[in-house]
Length: 325
Image (cartoon, rainbow, N blue to C red; front, side, top):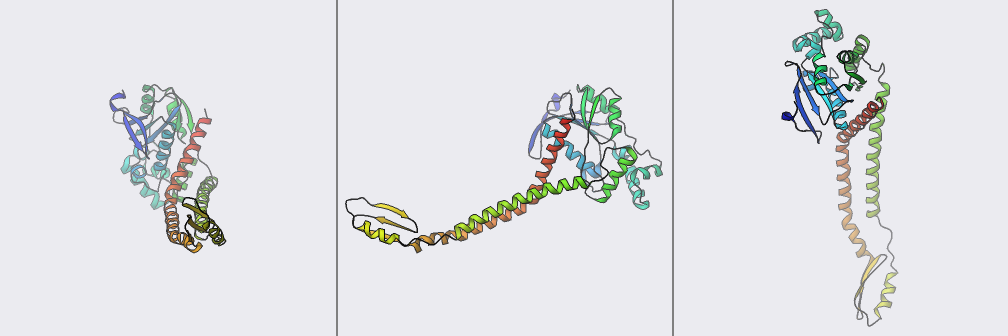
């Protein structure tokens, strides 16, 4: 069933084995990651062209899909059921009509669907459940906030453990949409997102502190190298005493503040000023290197910060999902 579609899938610079099977009669596809088994993570996701492909800021579909794939990859196995049920079953044109009514009359999309004569949510999950059963699964951890999905899969004989996906809304429009999901469809979503925003802000602040500490440490090293202490000029007297010795081979001697070569015939003294000159020559190079490193860290901070925070949040979500077992 899976062997002839199995291949390596690369996402966010990580490889995982992937197989693909159809769901029902052109109703979607099941993407099987790794070696699945009971209690693996499963995401049942209805296609959303705006959110998944066009990265719209008007819904949470794209971020939910990203978070689900992050968790499946981190776990090393799981199933993504990608169903052709655009616009909660109303289709893309119906969805666009719903958006228009919502914007003109300041309604949420559930209310605008009703005004247009559509069901607020006409999606079905029977074929998805049968596909999971055909894959040998009898119990799953479902990545969803939607109780309707849980109920639909359980009605087909699957044991389902719901794993909430709480995605921080990027703007007030999405926050209102999530509130409508919670109020009208019973989705397990927070009433107040302040705690979640605080957690994200703390994660970003921690990363910023680490970056500042790195830059401060490098700058301190540069200052130490660029400003050495005063040289010890007393070395010249030792050089005179050593110059009177005989029967010894030539030897390079290093002392604080100066360097000289001692031989039986003569002693060549390099003054402290000459020794300090080598530090002056390297000072510009060191400072330029530090400035370049600081600039590179600053430019990468936003990108790395988002990646780091995403990975941390993925691990937290995965640990929470494991604790539900």
